[in-house]
Length: 615
Image (cartoon, rainbow, N blue to C red; front, side, top):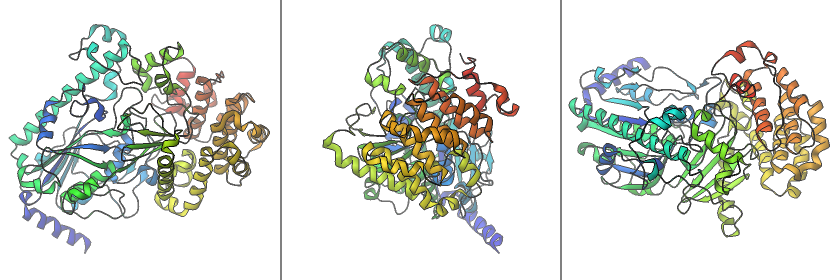
């Protein structure tokens, strides 16, 4: 009966024709936050075709990728859901997460309603689903639809992708840019060097390239006779790739350009007149529900996002939206756990492992000369406080006024004048991560082992447990005197993940927590859990109380999965690259051959680094 109804719905949809429902097209540029476009920022890259689209459409001043890296951002887009709630938060995936019960990737619902759905060509989802695309490849096109059939099409453009900036010193010396490097003003957290100015200039040139490519695609819509029935979204798939952008939960990693254009026939579906700059906040969780709403398709209640265009969305509704949630977790081999909350002009950032500094070595990042240049400047002691921060431990929480400080270099968390703002945003973010609940409070190997059959159901069944993990992590927001009793209880817990977080809190306090040295030594030697022993060794190593090497070598040999070994190697890299400066002689033979032979494998990347094979 369901199949008969679907066929009837499909035939009815075709009878309506494309003229009765809009086509929707996404043109997507890779790896560029709004800070790089002249449309948003003085001195940004000129993009005349996008600027023309903006004159006739809406420019969103506050559009956000919920994650600062591709696979997690795209998983959020395609599902309309927060990645840490559904098990899709790690880049790149160690395993595909199943779709939540009762939900499909949103183009599936468009297909059910009679739309022709095409994607050219990137997917990079961390989720397992099929049947959402009629075509998905480098040749996918809306032109293959049936006569009169409306379409949803995604066209990806890679000219601004990070890999384009993996050029050599010889290339920098010999390849001139259209943009004059001497005209560049670098961001305040970057050193003002020739390498950075040239990299900025080259990156801006790539924006010109991608603008021309997108312009040619828009011209093709006109030639094909579909432009007057097509709503066009232009956006960047997450933040820009200069250091501290892509992969990091600063505005440079999360704040994306977004322009939406509707032809005259469909302009009534936009809640503001053409040429308006919209201040209301929208996030990637909202994009799928918005397309469904534009197409007249009901939004599944299990999605987290809310439409920002189409029927039922007023100018007042849009203006009232002032909040965005962001997340950063593992990025290739480099681990972190950061959550952010934008509320109006204020940005709250929660670093759950503040000792795990931003600039920790990450092989793909450090192929870029600008990363190497920045690290060399730091090692030489030539940076100011704002520029050094990338390579230093962070506070557990930070607060920024984005209107006054768009590059997040002036932390207001310790300013009594902002105490009430800090408290409010801290509480709101804590409620958010508990409410999801956020599965990243389980170490990735534990999540993969215990939760991946049904991450959403597991989260709901373990909501109280995850809330306890979050409360344990938040002991680092108290004074050590107040937190001490709670830390002691955590270290004595029967739950190994509570002990795990208790030790992370000890590392967050550093020397202040030295009274737990004896307990940590006992845990490092005797705890039944491999990862808990490593976190104890990490704490002891960071405060100089005990050489961590013996414990870590044993834990690496005992690792049951590559993911577990990679998490331990993150600690090893931190202890090598941080102030403690421990040396590690890693024998590759301690790892199974398949872990160390995969060129893109995370264990292999770490081994190459420790063996000096990365140049």
